[in-house]
Image (cartoon, rainbow over all chains, first blue to last red; front, side, top):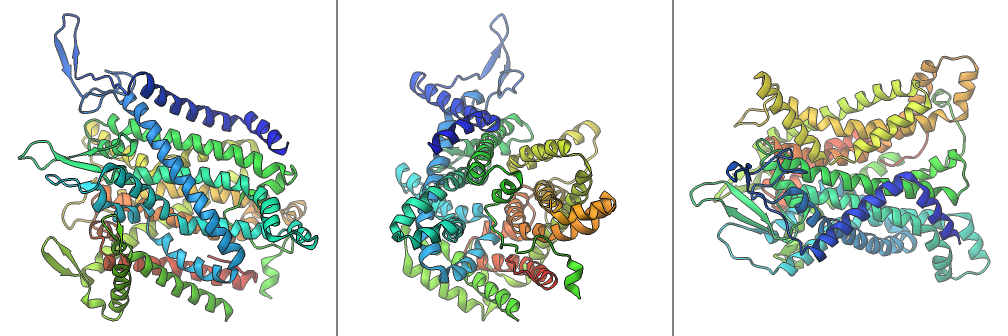
Length: 348
Length: 286
C-alpha cells in the first residue's frame, strides 16, 4: 500500500512524467520501426528538381532534408537515430542493472560482515578516481574491438558483445560497491534495527524485512544514475572509435590515409565519434546524435529527480529541511551534535 | 598525530590501488583472463619504483626513455587542470555569492537551468566550442584561438576555457546547495536579527562554514575534470599526460601517469583536510 501511494505521487511529478514519457516514446518508436518497418532507413543521395534533374548531392543538412539531414552515405539521420535508440538505451540499462545487482552483494558483504576491511578497501578503490573510466575501458577493449584495416576478425560478434558488457560492468563495481556498502551500513546503524535485534530478529529476517525495504528505492535511484554514467561512458568510447560490438577500420581509397570507422552494431556512440570527424564540414552529423544523447541523459536525470523527490521524502516526513538533508545520500556526513558552532570560539 | 597517520595510510593504500589498476592491461589476453601474467606485471611495476630511469615506452619499433620527457607533458597537463580548477572555483564562488542575494524564486529557476546544463555531455560542449570558433573565423577572418596544436607548440587558452565550463556549472550547483544548507541554520537567523546586513552575513558567516562542505564535494569535480581533460587533450591534439597514457597504454606508463596525477591532487586535498580538522575539530574524509 505504501508502494501504491508512492507510485501515484510519482505519476504526478511533472519532471518524472516528461522524462519517462520521452524515453518510452523513443524506445517504442524504435521497436515499432524494427518490427513493422524492418529497420528500413530512407536513403537520399541526390535531390531532384521538378523536371527530374539532379540539383544537389549529399550529405544534406537538416534544412535540405528535414528533420536531421543525412549522413555521408545518404541515410537519413533521424531514422538512423531511431533505429539505434533501442540498442543504446538497452545496453545502458543492462550494464547499469548488472552493476547495481553485483555491487549490492559485494557492498552488503563489505558493509555488514567485513567492516574492518572497509577502511582499507576504500583506500585501494581511491585509485579509480585518478584515472578516467573511459581510459580504463579503452585500454581493455581496444585490442578486442578494433579490427585494423586488412586484418581478419579474431572474435565473433557475440563474444565481443559479452566481453564489452563484462568490462563496462566490472570497471564500476569497486566504486559502486563502496557507495552501496556505506549506505547499507548507514541503515544498519538506524534505531529500528537495534530494536528489531532486541526483539529477537535473526540476521536474515532483519536483512529481508528491515534493510532491503529501506534500500530498495535507493538502489533504484542508484540504478538510474548508473544508466546515465554508462551513457556518458559510451559516448566517450564512441568518440575514441571503440564502438559497441566491434569497430571495423576501413580506408576510403587504397592510396588515401583517411580512415573510416564502421560500427558493427548500429548503436549511437559510433555515430557521435564518426560525426566529430566531420565537425568542420557536416556539423549536423555530430550535433544530431550528440543532442540525442543529451536528451536521453536529461530525461533519465528528470526521472532520477522525480524519484528522489518522492521516494526519499515521504518516508521521513515532509519537512523541507529534512528532505534536503537526505537527498545527499552519496556523501554521508558525520552526525553533528551541535546545531551550530562559531569557528572563532574554537581557535581560542 | 592521528590525522597524519590517516593521510599517510590513505596515500599508501591509494598507491597500491594505482599499481593494481595500472597492471590491468596484462590481465586480459584477448578476451581470456591471464592471472599469472597479471601478478608478474604487478611485480615488474613494483620493481620499477626502485629504478625509475629504466622505464621506457615504444613507438613502433623504437624505444624511448620515459623520464626526462615525461616532465614536460606532466607540467602541461597539471597546468591545464589546476588553472581550470581554480578559475572555475572562483567563478562559481562569485556567481554563488550574487545568486544568494537574489530571491528564492529566482534561485529555483537558476538551479533548474543548472540542472539542465549538467545533463549536457562534455563532448557536446567541446563540439559547440570548436564550431563557434570556426564560424567566427569564417565570418571575420579572425582566428581567436588555435584549435589544434602543431609540433612543439603549446596551446593553453582554448583548452583551459573548455575545461572550465562544465566544472563551473558543477561547482556552482554544489555551492548554491551548500550555501543554502548553511544559510538555513539557526545562527544565521540570530546574526540577521542582530541587524547585520545580508552581504555581511553571507560573506563572513555562511561562506566560512559552507566552504568546508564545498571542499569535501570538490573531489567529484576533480574526477569529472580528469575525464574532461582526456577529451580535451585528444581533441586539441596536445601533448599532455592523458593523451600520452591514451597512446601508450602499457602498465608502466599508466602507473607513472596515474601516480603523478594523484600526488599533486592529493597534496592539495590533504592540506585542506588538515586545515579543516585543525580549525573545526571535526573528523572529515577527503
